[in-house]
Length: 84
Image 1 (spheres, one colour):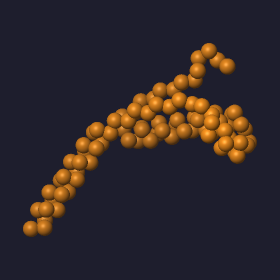
Image 2 (image 1 turned 90 degrees about the horizontal axis):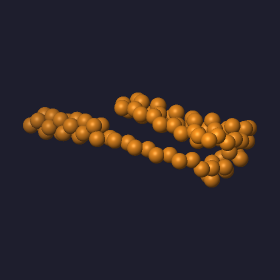
Image 3 (image 1 turned 180 degrees about the vertical axis):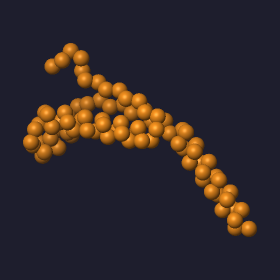
Image 4 (image 1 turned 135 degrees about the horizontal axis):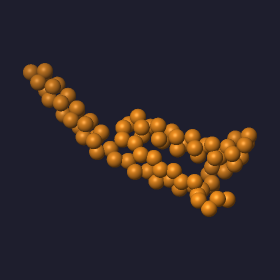
């Protein structure tokens, strides 16, 4: 055991970066599980139900949601104008 637990912190500001960070976290967890239980997928699957990790996700979708709302409003206005 090490004195310093393995802790990771990443930051991203785009949808692409967020997807990549989530994938990286999942791959890192899977790699550690494979190191813990190599070659035993069923044992790994069962252990994953009780193996402890801590994860904290902070996700701010404000800008994305605002942009989506603007597009929806513009589409609604356009559709309303073209129906006359």
